[in-house]
Image (cartoon, rainbow, N blue to C red; front, side, top):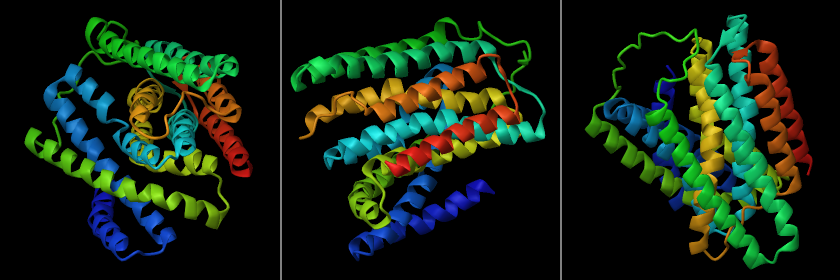
Amino acid sequence: MTNKIFMLMTFIGVPLSIIGTLMHWSYIVLFIVYCLTIIALASYMGRATESLAIVAGPRIGGLLNATFGNAVELIISIFALKAGLVGVVLASLTGSVLGNLLLVAGLSFFIGGIKFKRQQFNVYDARHNSGLLMFAVIIAFVIPEVFAMNMNETKTLSLSIGISVILILLYLAALFFKLVTHRGVYQSNNESVVHEEEEPEWSKGKAIAILAIATVAVGYISEHLVHTFEYVGETFGWSELFIGVIIVAIVGNAAEHASAIVMAFKNKMDIAVEIAIGSTLQVAMFVLPVLVLISLFFDSSMPLLFSWQELIAMVSSVLLMVVISNDGESNWFEGLTLLAAYVIMGIGFYLL
């Protein structure tokens, strides 16, 4: 049912996006059309990547998911950087961290918890991810802000580049650890020893073709989407920070968010938690550092510096998620707690 809705949105949205751009429709209408079309295209990119991952095996599959898992957000951010919207990019990445840890995990725990009183997921993965979350957000994001207080612009950018390279290398090492050297070493007691053989939805050729077409379409629409931000912000009274933290972050991750909630409803909590926390780590340790390096080729370089509001919101989210997930169990009340935290932060960013 969900796939049919996304298919309909894609076949209507892509032509409308092109026609609307050429005919110079209202920025508000275009903003809505672009956002809905990108969400639909993201679902196709996700399904194509999933099919390729099954065909290629778990190791190559892990790398494919790492590369394309947040491809939509990466594409939108590149065009936003090109347009000089550094604040929107940093805000959208903040929104991804908050959205994945609080909104997605919260909805997954809450909806799954209504159907099942107690849900379990791999406690070893949860603890491993907790350490990486603490490192990626608390150390790699807070430290530059503290040291940059006594640095000029050039030194701050050098520090950001150094930290970005370290984050990417550690992320690749984390993938190598999980998919190669320690694959299957840490299994929770409730994990089945017998794994069902997964069937890919599409053949290798079809998946590559769909992934390529969807990526090109997202690139085209994203380039035009970023030009609507300023007008939409002025019309609705939204700040650059709010557009980035809430709107862009949700659009970039909507299809992935839906998958996590569906998995939680089916009691496949390992997958739901991996989507929520794995995607956060991907943004913090791969997407953001890559964008810092890419920004060096544009007029406006992007140092790894967030506002204090963004930093405190991200650090609070990480600490709350670590405390809630470290026992390897979830219920609807824990989900509600995460959602409440997201709403509080959303109100704060809206009123800034």
